[in-house]
Image 1 (cartoon, rainbow, N blue to C red):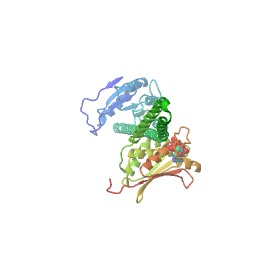
Image 2 (image 1 turned 120 degrees about the horizontal axis):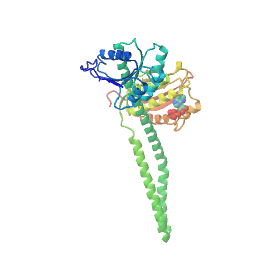
Image 3 (image 1 turned 180 degrees about the horizontal axis):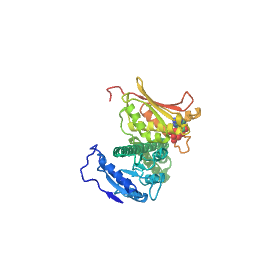
Image 4 (image 1 turned 60 degrees about the vertical axis):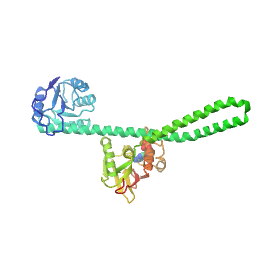
Length: 395
Ligand code: ADP
């Protein structure tokens, strides 16, 4: 492993806000290595880059595993002494899944380039056709694209986590509600039995009083636990704020980008920022949109790629704003349409059947209404929710 130190001259960065990247160059050919180093030193945005050079896949894997090396990007030759072709790329992606990779190949092969990008490379450059400018641009774009992908994945995780928390909150609230009534009945009956014992049982009363007191105390304790669970479920919701519906839709669709790309689904959004505002919990409403979008994608798993499209739109009405999510999926039978928003209704092998019931309760807690209908052209369905609109000037 060679560590080529940055040039001693001060960095003249094209963008002063961007720190110099730390690059791992995986290249076994010394002539290619020198040429790439020359290109890097030539360009203002990469001339101060720290360059860590290794000559084999095994050495690259060690470098990616070592916390000290903390590289921002891998420049990867696919043909190495211990690995060849796309296998090299896959091994590097496995060793550093969060590190962007730019392939530097000797082969101008469009098919190979496409396959490399499909398997996670940020770019594919052909040696001999790459100059200082194109190399520097590829490095900067790859690092930036990767940063955005990592951020989106983290946001998506937060929404999923919130979704699970909310599902737990919903279940806790349901259990609390269901258990409260039998518990109150137990408590009341125990109190009544105690007063009857006092009146009718005379000397034997003392023996019964103690177990009945235990019933009352334990029932009160259980009621207190349930009260606390309900309090927790209520606290898991943050307070209401003024939300721009167009922005909310754009943010939610942004979270879905990796999933849309992965499933090759086109997204058409007609929801301008500034169209209308509503009062509510942005995290919860974002969760509703993510639930509806995720369902739409799952419903289109068998839709031919050319028709895989989701349309999200927002329309301002005099008193409210209507949001629609329309898909070209397998649609719904009339029987399922009636029950699909009930808790635990699912037709998916791995489904929980809570997404729509949670979405409906979120929309209803915002004084809105969630509805579903089969599309009139017979393909797919549309979910619609209407929320009361906040008037201009209202907070
Ligand atoms: P889950 O996704 O875990 O099944 P949901 O409550 O989100 O739970 O959905 C319940 C059911 O409603 C799904 O299993 C599916 O049968 C149906 N469904 C939801 N969205 C769609 C859609 N866009 N197209 C067709 N069916 C849908």
